[in-house]
Length: 273
Image (cartoon, rainbow, N blue to C red; front, side):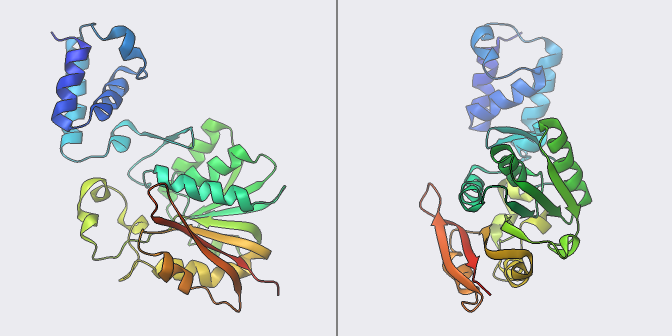
C-alpha cells in the first residue's frame, strides 16, 4: 500500500510529466487536482491503484491523456473529446480572440470543421448576442459537439456536411476554421498524439493547403460585405496562405503569430462588391 504523494511521484517519473500523472489519477478517483494537496498522505486503495496503473500504461503507449480521460479544457470550458475529434489546443485560442475582435454586435459566425465544438462554443460563451453556426463532415464529431453545447448550455446550431454545403444560401459576418493543414507526407503524423487523432482532420494534400484553398474559394458566397475569413494553419504556412487570396476579391490579408511568435492564423476581409 502506497500513499498518493509517492504514487504520483513514481508515475510522473515514468511518464516524464507530473501533470499528466495528476490528471490521470484525478480521473481515476473522480476528483480534481486540488484534492491531492489535502490527501497527499492518504493510502490509495488497491482497486484505485490498479485502475490508475492501467491508465498510466495506456499513456505510456502513447494514447493522449485527453482521450483517456475524455476531457480537455479550452477557453476555460470543460469539453468532452473522443477519438472522433481533434484535441483542442491552447494555440487555437488565438483564432477565438481574432474572431471576437472582428464579430460585430449581433453578428453571425460560422465555424467550419467544428470537431468538439471548441471554437464555436467559446465564441458563443463570450458573445451571447451573436448567432453561431458550426459545421462538420463527421457525424460522430458533431454528436460530441452537440453534447458539449447541451452540457454548457450554449446556443450553437450544428450542421452535418462538407464545409459550406449544409449552409448554402447563408451569409455570415465572420467565418472561422481550424482545418486540416498538415502535409500528407509529414512524418509527425506518425508521432505523439497525432497517431491517435483522426487523420482526415489533420492532413490536407501534398502541401497541407488543399482544404484551405477550398475554404478561401467558397467563402465569398457566404460572407456579408466586409466580412472576415480567419483560419488556423502551420508555423510555415503564413506566406503561402496569404498568397491564396485573390486581391480582386479580398482585402487586408494578414497573418497573426501565436505566443511563441510563430505564424498561426491568417485572415482577410471580403472587399466591397
